[in-house]
Structure formats: structure tokens, C-alpha cells
Image (cartoon, rainbow, N blue to C red; front, side, top):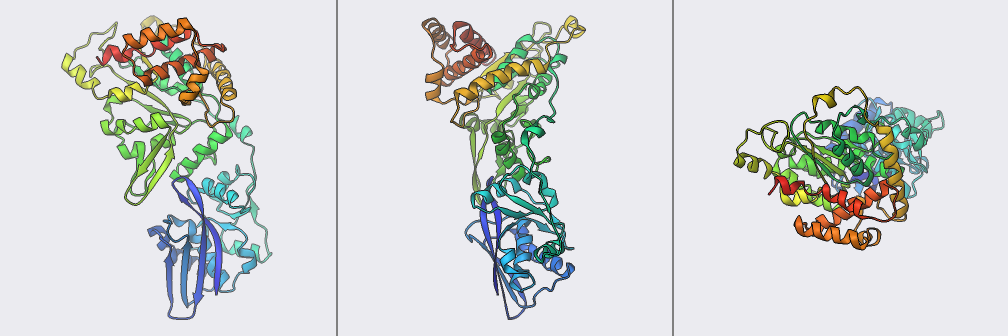
Amino acid sequence: MLAKIKSLGITGIDGFPVTVECDVAPGLPSFEIVGLPDTAVKESKERVRSAIKNSGFQFPLGRITINLAPADVKKEGPVYDLPIAVGILTATGQLDGETTQKGAYLGELSLSGEIKGVRGVTPMLICALNEKIDTCYISAENVKEASFITGITAYVPKNLQELALFFKQETMLNVAEHKNFDDILKESALGTDFKYIKGQKTARLAAEISAAGGHNLILVGPPGAGKTMIARAIPSILPSISFEEALESTKIHSVSGVLENGILTQRPFRAPHHTASMAALSGGGNKAKPGEVSLAHNGVLFLDELPEYNRNALEALRQPLEDGVITVSRVQQSAKYPANFMLVASMNPCPCGNYGSKTNKCTCSQSAIQKYLSKISGPLLDRIDLQVEVDAVSYEELTEKELQEDSATIRQRVEKARKIQKQRFVGTKIYCNAQMNEEMIKKFCALDKNAQMLLESAFKTLNMSARGYNRVLKVARTIADLNNEENISTKHITLAISFRNLDRKYWQ
């Protein structure tokens, strides 16, 4: 007898429908799975066999053939355990086919028949909605993810036996309760508060501009100046993540298996160690999985001690910094992942860290300094909008009892600026000024005559690239938004240029 059971799979970070066809025929006992299964799918034969027996059902002795359609797409993971088991029980008449074939099944089975959680439930449920599947059966471990997907009734059976009793109308199943995203958002935690950061007025301003417009930022200065502390405080002033952005980021985290609370309630903040490989940063491996640049989508990627990272790994950041996406190609698979993140980097200006310092003397030779700085290429540096020099904090600033402006106050200004940008880009997939394309720059970054003359002078003096010119305009647009001014003036251009000339000091 033949049974067809609905399930779902993952390719990249998107779900796709899978039909699990189960045929049980007379013949010598065998159990075959076809349809490009990976090792985890092939091993499901033993898990399903034991789960069916230990749940009080009969495992057929005939020839069992399982086809995972479409057969030309790779199937990965233990997500097909549950639909295969339901398919076999349906094909052997132990479950009613009219009942079992109405919903989609997602879950790994233990040998006892317990249904366990799987990765990638969020994109799979979104795919189910698109395929007009309104009922799913999932593990209790995946309930948090299902709670934020409206339009789907997600039943939560504990094990295979309880699911069978539900189909026979002998028991009721728990249903994933839908939650309001805005209510969860209020419980979101923040990072380090800016009020505890001593001094560093310029760096604080740069961090505010960076957060308000989604601009990339690099902090250059001696050890102990507060670069890392400022970077780790940036999440506390970032604007609240919207539901659409949260869903985009959640899909990536769900597929990667690092999702904890069902949906992201704050913007991601990723801080990989400098020993991270190119594949870890950009994505890759045998199955072309998302890397740190994608996990930081709609949030912050913080690279501390930038020159210590592998140069090839840093150069791999150039495409996502420019395009907001990254294409990961491997022999077995090729995938395109979103990577629209805000890069925040920090570094010392030389091996000893004191080159250019007003308080400490540098002990490095000129060749050692140039060798150290050359680890950061010009094209990568050109993609960083705000370049800020920080110096050591004085004793007076460090012992000052009065706290600085707190993160809540700064965040209010950032939220207002982002609200202006949201209205400006309504109807598009652009969320902030840093994402503007050429057409938008021309439309929203018009300059008066004085501002144009100032920018022309800076362009020639600093030998700016066309990319640098556009990024100055974007930063100036954000500064104007923070000041609640519709037009970009000379003061906005002046401040934007002042954050753009650090590479001329250290890298020439």
C-alpha cells in the first residue's frame, strides 16, 4: 500500500515542501530511502524501526521503500523521522490515511518514540504557509519558534503513541500558543550602558551616528582606551528590531541551530575571536552553512583587534559590506545568505599600541608599524564609513564621579532618526541610510552650493574614492536626521568628513 505524507526541508535558509512517499509491498524484508538523503536521513531507518516497535505498533516485514520528493534536492537532518514513521503506519493501515495526510510533520524520533526538536523550523513553517498548509505537527522543543508564525496550527505531540491516539480521537494534543512580538520585545535585554564610559566624547558621538544610520565604524587607539567597551555598549543604543527584521534574522539562527528563545527580540551582536577562519566568518563547510556575517544580519559584527584576523578572512568581508548578501559556493552546495550587518572594528595603531598617542611613547620601528597596518587593506578600509581615533583616558576623566549621558537618552535620539528613515524608505526593503543605493543618494542627499564646494575640496585633498564620496553623503544624511533637519548643510558635511580622514594619517 502507498501513503503520501507532507513534510518540509531546508535549502540555504529557505524552506521547501517535501512529499514523503511510503510504499510497503510483499517480499523479502528491506528498508530503502531514496531521494538524495544525507547520512542523518539514511540512519533514520533504525530510529523509525525502534520507535514504531517501542510505541506499541507493528513494524512491517515486507519491502519498504521511502521516496523523498523532489528527488533532485538534497535532504538533510533527522526532520524526516516523524513523517517516515507516520507514512509507514498509514501504509500498513495502522493509522487512517484521510487523517494523517492533512498536515505536515517535522521531528526527530528517539528509539522510544519520543518526538525531539529539529533545526530550521521557522523557515519551514513560513514555507508551509506559502504552500497553504495550515496544520503542522512539531516537537515541544520547537514550540517557541512556532509561537510567532501566525496562520498555522502547530500541534505538539510528546511521542508517536500520543500522536496516534490523537488521530483516533482518543486524546487531545497541546497546541502552540501564539504570542505577540511587541510584548516579547519589551523584555529584551540591552548591552553595557554608555553612562559608564569615561571621556571619549568623539567616539561616543561616532557610535551614536553609526547606530542611527547603520554605518560601519572602526576605533583606532592604544590598549585600555575603552575601544572594546564602546563597541560592546553599541547594542544598548541600537533601535528596536522590527518584526520583519527579526523574522529574517531568526531564520538564519534557526537553520544554524543557535536560536534560543523562538525569535530574536534584539538585534544580533556577534563577536567572533580573531582566530576565526574564513569559513567561520563568511560561511561555508561541506554544506555551505551561514557564517558570522549572516548571523549578524540586521545587527552588529564586532571584530576586536582587527589586524589579528586572518587577512583572507577579512578580505571575504568586502562583498557583504558592499552588497548586503554573501554567496557561499561549495562542491556539494551553493547558497546565498543575507548579510546586512553593521561592522564595528577596533585595533591598535601599532604592535605596542602607542603610535600616535598624546600620552605614551611608541617603541615600534617605522617598518613594524607599516607591516602591522598593512594587514588592513585599502579596499576594506574604504568600506568603513566612520574612522575614529581614541586616546588613553586621563586620570581626571577616569575618577570623575559624575556619570556620562546614559544609553536610554542616546537611544531616544537614535530611534527618532530611524523613524525618519523608515518614513523616507517606506515601500522598500531599505531600513537605514547606510543601505541607500545610488538613486536614493541622489534623491535624498542633495547638497546646497556651499556644502558641495566643501565636499569637492575634501574629495580632492583626501584623494577620496567614489565609494568614499557616497559614504560621506550617507553619514551626513544621518547626522542631519539626528538633528531633525531636512536638508544637509555644511556643518553635517564637515562632521562627516572629519570621521573619514583617519586612513590618511595611519595608512599613508
